[in-house]
Length: 104
Image (cartoon, rainbow, N blue to C red; front, side, top):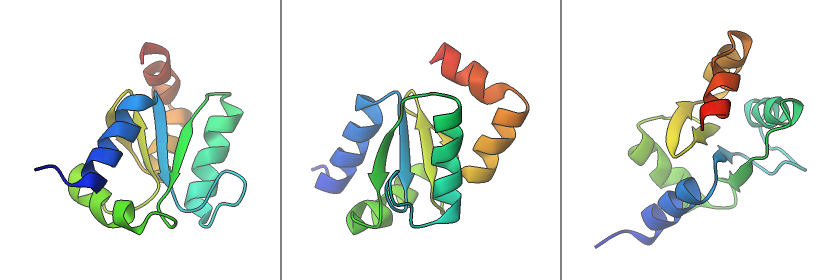
């Protein structure tokens, strides 16, 4: 039987083209890496959905086990984990992020 937290995570990832699992909210980020990642997607004018892992401790505990990514934020595009703050910024700088968003 599926875990309700796992089901919610999978639903969030499948229901939105771009999902950011972050600490805080777009209006009140609780972590510099989360703030920086959300700001990058704002600058790119890409709509994104966020899930606050501080307000959802079950997701904060469970997602790293599912994604095999230990830290937050975690960025999912088109249902696939892209990475965290450093990786997404690196992909933006070399043009891969825009390409990934265009093909998604």
